[in-house]
Amino acid sequence: MKLRHIDLSIPAHGVWLDGVLAHAPDVRGLAMCLNSSGHPPLDQSHRPLELTLQAAGFATMTVDLLTRQEALRDPDAPFNIPRLTDRVLAAIEWASHQPPLVGLPLAVVATGTGCAAAVRAAVRSPESFRSIAFLGGRADLAGAEPLRAVRTPIRFIVTPGTPEATILTRAYPLLKGDHRWLALPPTDSEHDNDLLAARAACAWLRQHFPQPEGTAQA
Image 1 (cartoon, one colour):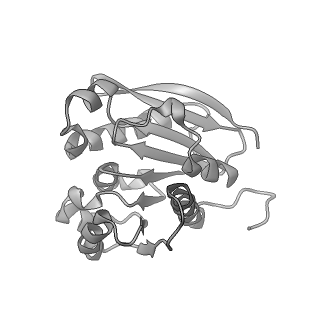
Image 2 (cartoon, one colour):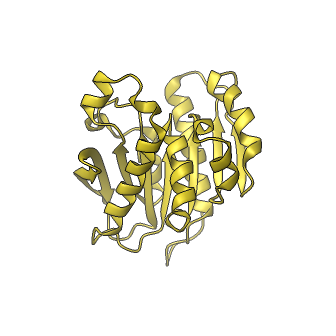
Image 3 (cartoon, one colour):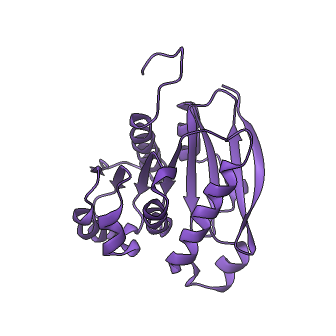
C-alpha cells in the first residue's frame, strides 16, 4: 500500500496545530497519534509507531497538540488538560470533514499528557472513537471521574520500573469500561522498546477495526 504524506495545519480554537497525514484509498481506518510535548518536530516523523500502523493498513494522522511557541515559552502548557482536550476534539472534527477521511473508523494512540486529553475527549464524544492505546503517558491527569466514565476500549502499554508505570498502576483500577494492561518486556535499546510498544498499540487497534475486504487475518 503506497501512502501519500501531507503536512497539515489544523484549526483549533484560535491556533493552528501542526500535523502529518499519511493516507491511501484502501486503508482500514485512521489512527490519530497525539503528541503533547511540542517536540520532536513532526518533520522528524517516520517513528516506529507510525510505520507499524501504516504497515498494518492504517492511515496515520500525527498531531502536535501544542504550538511550537507554547512548547518553548510555557513549561506548563503540556499540563493544561482542558485545552488539550478541546484540541483533540477539534482535530477529530477537522478530520471528519476531509473527503479522504470521511467515514473512516478512528482510533487514538497517545503519549504524555495527551493520554489524559484523550480520556476526556472520549467521554465528551464517545461515538468518535473505536479504541485508544496509551504508550505510557499520564492518563491519570484526566481525573478520577473521567477515568470512571470512559467506555472506549483502552490499553495501557507500560515500561515496568518507570515513574509513569508506578503512577498508572493507581489510575488503571479506576477504569470501568473495556481495558487492558500490558507490561513490556526488557529491551536493549529505546528504539527496541518503542518498536514493541508500537506493535502492541497496533494489535489493540486491529482488534477493534473491521478487516479490509479481500484480505486474510494476520
